[in-house]
Length: 357
Image (cartoon, rainbow, N blue to C red; front, side, top):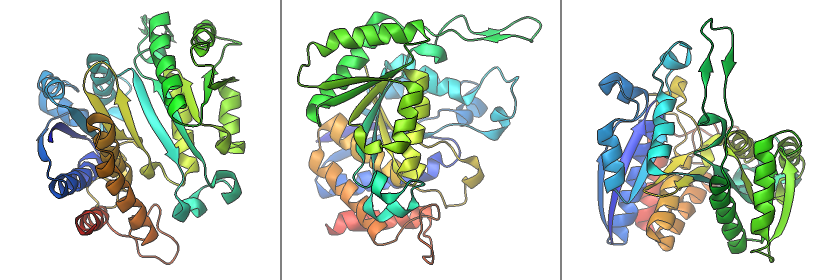
């Protein structure tokens, strides 16, 4: 098979972890005799520095011409620490989502037996936890208008807007994923307070009639956040709006032991984007200490979701699990008394495993 991918390393540790994910992808393609073509492009702070635009037109064109996008992370301290900056790296991510029509972010939350001890929760609470968060990506507070500040600078405002169409497409997708899993869907909202959430719940109830096999429950977001800590194994598929999903998915990632372990896929009208759920971690940039596993697992998701290459994806996932079992891991998840490996050492170990198996 011929695979054409756009590679967008981004900022901070993005280039380092994407390099390892790309190396794993190259190794798998060579092993299974696939033709892999890839091109790099700018996004985020590095794109602002180079072009003044966090998501340049050339980057968008490459994404549109590709079968999938392998993405790292964006963000830089000089923009984070400057609230007056009118052009920000995060605007590039939002623009990419909007222009590519990426309305759904899929984040699996899976525990690895060898890392259960790293979770802040008791082992009996998280062992076997396996659920999927589906977050709406192109609506809500992040995209609602009007948005801004008053002329005197003393008042700021955001607007949360959702249409029936936006809710229908993401909720229906969530039901379809639930049908492929354990047939349970949790719809997360704040319907006791927010008008947009009441529309979410109304639409979800309508669509649930088309999926009678799925057990559907409705939770307020604060209750859902508590239950993720108290009883994470109670979830199968969770669907929610943009801001709630942004918060809950990070909470879900931490209970597995490290934010550096979880991949994600953003899908929609055009090219899908595959990325780790962690940020750019600028403090570690260039130090060769960042955990590349989430990005490598994102590459596995890319092979399966974008190209239907399930066997190839499973080999990468198996290699990642094997690296943790062998204690070839970076400092954030290394066990006490175990010398941590560097980013590139972990990546090379996984490449060698792929080639040998």
